[in-house]
Amino acid sequence: MIRKLLSVITGQDDEQKQIGYYRQLMRREAEMGGHVFGPVPEGRRREFFCLDKNTWIWHEEWTDTNGNRQSKTTRYDVRPTGILKAQENGSYHKISEQESNNLIGAAQIYISRALTDLYGVQA
Image (cartoon, rainbow, N blue to C red; front, side, top):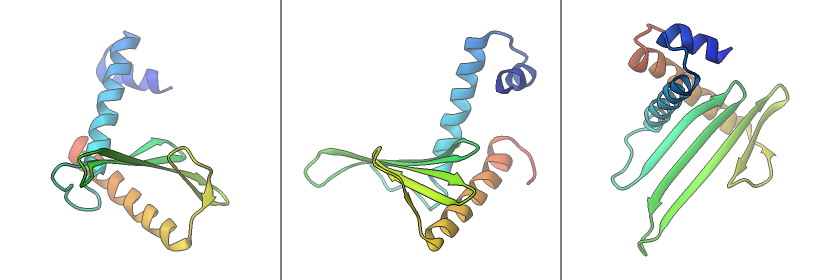
């Protein structure tokens, strides 16, 4: 279905071009999402994005005080029974109500900004 949508949006039938366009949109959304919680500090890379209808990703990279590159990836899996969280490909655990509310708020801001800032749609 996404391929059909992309062919309508882009006017392109070439599957590789559509995939490239989709990835470019995902990168732009991830970068924009990294600013949902405020400015990204100098020397850091932060991304926050919706991977699919049930999955949100938070990724951050930085250089520590010893000059070593560090990173942390958090994956949120939204289910009818609650939101599960895994970090660095570890096991999932259910998050607190407060963290759930924080994620929901961040997701709402992300969606609003993506629609208005990236796609020019008034939310």
